Length: 415
Image (cartoon, rainbow, N blue to C red; front, side, top):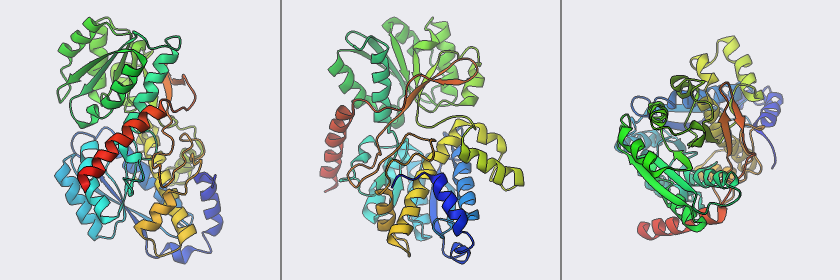
């Protein structure tokens, strides 16, 4: 099944007339429990807007094989208990597919989704070991996990160090909570294996005062710095790097670095900064062009058009392109009425799905819920992001070793 979402949408256009009655029937409900009020408001509005816009576009063409999508949105404020309450509420309302866009909330809800047999999306956040479909049967972290992204970042550093990491000094600065701590096990394993010197630099929340930690990094004198910062933390880090004489081109950021962050740093000042990315940026993509033409030009967009210019909007389109395509496959292959088991099977049937180039191709199986874990490295040249690599996945053996270890421990504790 090598088929992109756009080709599916083209097919749905022909089906729209024949299936209009079905498209007005019982919708499949997708629960979007996000932090819309506290820590993650720099990203959540764009992702929600993308999820709703894509659903509107698909519904306008007859739905997913005739089945409409209903996006149900609720705020959890990045609080695990509120995330659990959101899950339980939406479950009672008939939602079978959930996403939380928060590592601490995803971790809190995961055992319930597993016990209930409900599908939980976890793209780009949450537990790295959840790609193990044998253990995490209902969890789908499709795309690169933080573990995979970190492995790829280190591999890129190796390519820039004449193919060897021996004695290369890598500093990792991260907010000292679940999100920042998530990739440390993989980072330690790889740097130990490769003979690199690793410095860990936790930064206390809320991360606005980084003076002391960057002084420590300067003394460490790294060849490269990997950062897991978010939002305003990026701006503070850039200021501290300049103060400490650390060149911007030594930095590789987690994927959560967007156009707003660059503008706040200063477009010229940010020149040279790199990030690991999981989606194509910009608006020069057929799906985004179609959404702008069919929705925003006709006053049917679900929010501020300016947010469609943000890479986090593209991230939302990537996440929900995958989820909606899995649901479409479920309807096509398993028929109605939909159940979580059918949607699970639909997601596990995805093969080389890339949303027409919006993301690296993903292939999902019952054993591998990650889809391949490919990213690429981009560099800001002062005006635009310039790819520094193709899509790739590195150290997959190391990542899977940690995955198997952590997932086995989860399974043992869950017994």
